[in-house]
Length: 226
Image: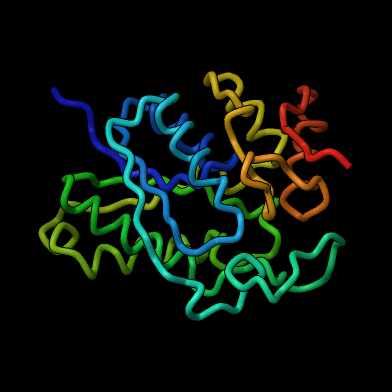
């Protein structure tokens, strides 16, 4: 029998790369998708391609979107600075409706491929306060997906898989290492330069560094000098 197919959202970062490794370990034929949405940290697109190739994606697709046109986030609007100190509430690095938009496109591709599973690396432990990284959101989206698609209506139940939802960054890293993930290929920084070197100061860099410390694993991140 053929392996089941899965679509995996990959950003080039630590979490989504681990989600891809988990999907592969569960026997799925993996099809990866990332988004060129006008983000500030474009080095992530190259990282997504690297990690998809390294982990055996059968097809890697990059979809272009223009989220700069609506702005509202430090990741899509150059006039909003990326914060380098911890704050309260939902941070300005939240991109309005991003996961809803990304999952919708991944859902369409899954229907075309005949894939019943979509993997996403969202996390409710170290998630920076983003509302679209919560288990309630993922459950609601799965319900909607089965109401809104031909596959769902015809009884081919679609699943939104978020295997990292309850794990700390350290647990994610340990799992990824056990599955052969090379985290040196990944880029997590919100303001990485063109070479993929991290700032070491933004929320994402702080969470990533703390994760490697928790896991007791050397941090392979390349940081900018100075």
